[in-house]
Image (cartoon, rainbow, N blue to C red):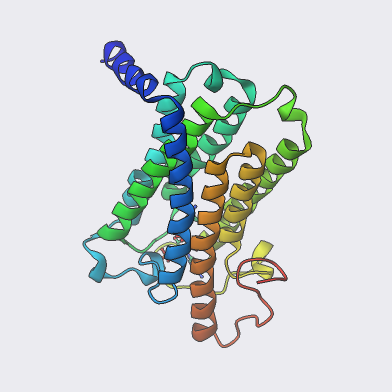
Length: 270
Ligand code: NDP
């Protein structure tokens, strides 16, 4: 199948390349920030309908594992396809490293995280479609930026912005994976209920996995220094801090002995 079709798709991407597409990516980035802000407002009234807030009101219920795989895959496949078609920008070392960070996160999120889920609640069709569209859109935004437009001066990988951002990305990802591991292990096989998470960053915040993910994408944004990566980090902050707030409130209502000094999502602050 192949090479002729691949060349066709790549030719299409090359045709689209230019100042107009660059401007479009910028507009999409402002759109992503606005989407995050509006979602955060809406989420004050309606909890994001999946996991513990899953409901038939939002469409057929899909099993959690395949839903996670399919909805997250575009964030892996779209940038990968763009990298395959990429030219000199995609081949530059900083771009390969930064795109590698993004792809590593989504290889884990789409291919490993779903297999580890224990008795996760089903995902409503509406939420599944929203997540799928978001991942396709953001996969294009980050992938296109890093394979076609973001250029870095010599020595970028040794500079303070990249190193600080990369460390934030790495530590954030480690916190995210470790916190999800803690949550998973709260359930014995066959159990579907909820317990108070303890240990790791859960000693400080209710949304430790979300804190890790927020830190990860702000680190990535600093390492990339692009408007596209900053918009993604901001959107993640809006959405995941809302989900963390809902979880925090839910825990306080559900468990009388829930630690009262635990913050919502940012240790010691919020
Ligand atoms: P949750 O914390 O809501 O749930 C994670 C998993 O742990 C689910 O399987 C859940 O089961 C289980 N779980 C959660 N709390 C408990 C508890 N107290 N006791 C027992 N089991 C529990 O996370 P999300 O599902 O919202 O997110 C999963 C991952 O995806 C996170 O790492 C998050 O950062 C990431 N994500 C990223 C987004 C982004 O914008 N970048 C957006 C959304 C998620 P159940 O399903 O039964 O509730």
